[in-house]
Image (tube, rainbow, N blue to C red; front, side):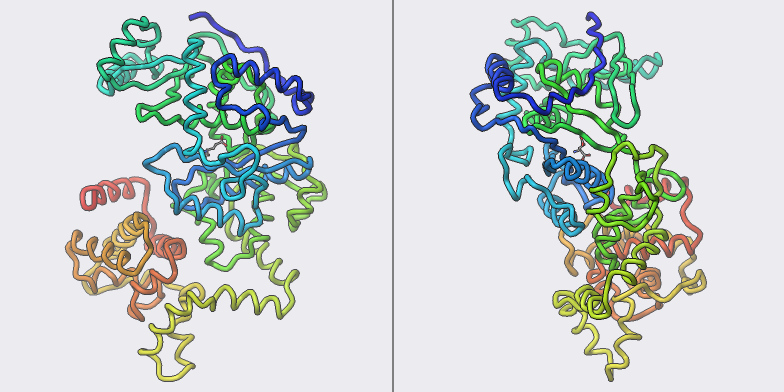
Length: 541
Ligand code: GLU
């Protein structure tokens, strides 16, 4: 295939101020590609406005990385009197779930990162949930197939595996070999009649390079030979991230895409799609990824990453937001404590520095302490503290645990203090046990966390059955098995029910405590963690 060769796509300011005539023109072009029936031209108004978005996939806990990217998008939009959109990217049906979507929405709102348009709020460019945009994607993919920019691929999994194996053996670049690229109309019809499964892939130049401008990094150049003929529509008929993301960014009039640097290698595919549709691409900015203090990519193995953790551990959302604002960005006067509004008024995306910003919980603690000291009156401090610790839902679970075990109110704090704050400092000796070695304790702790992470419905019964089943599989009596968990969660070898405590504290606080104990027990090397993961798979599947 001939090389298309990309013109360096410069982002023209006039793009944001297209007249309605020009816009209509663009829409009639879309009509030509037979997708106009789904585009109500009256609804599509080109906004002479900057529009940014956060596009989370609801597949897990609300991650601080999502809040970090949302913050920069919202700040950029607000600084430019623009709009900030939330779009749910839930085309991966197996991994997406409603609970995760709700959690993400709630967590972003808790942090003050609310949006102008989104699935819960609506807006002119909805629906804002990709699973509700199926007809839009079908119409767009048909137009690409008609124009031979996309093709049906009937290759079986086995064939693709064989091709891959061969490529690895020959040290060739890994990717689709183009087998179905030039199937004749007859061959395609025959395959369709036979009901053969297929995916739809995009046509990608074989040679040459794609050059594009990243707003933070300058010109980036990626060879087309490194870009696979990306699947756009999967065999279940659903779009992949790349296709849905580009179609939606265009139809939602997103002008600036600010996202994590892990997406930079996807830009050539995205730009090619913009070109195939004859659409003007947005400006791209790829933010540096958050890092653990050891500079590895921020991960829950080493740092709490869920926004729930910071909420449950009693952080101020303003402090967390401020801290995320310091990740790779600084105020012109270098002050470290600043509000969202102050960040908006001083915001300049060119002040983002590309060195991997380190998310350091100790530094966050320092900043959070400043918020508590400087921004809250005694009354506000007390009100917020009691809201956090004594909210009725939580207390309703704690009181029944205590009543049977105390004789006077002064017994309450020593017995239940660990439910309100960190447990007493523990040391390796606390894990000394008649029959369990410290390696066994370590193993129980790690396996327990992996099993607890699988729980979808965080109820006492589920926590209990998950841990008891694990005890059985390891071949330990419940009391023995629970010992390291007692020490790590409550700070004591025995206390009120540890299962209740785990249920009340929630996964994120428990994970942080267990991780702390694992470190006290000497930590898990990469190699031993791998071996343990294998054992876990063998035991629990
Ligand atoms: N759904 C993608 C994610 O969760 C969005 C990436 C993008 O912003 O393009 O990271």
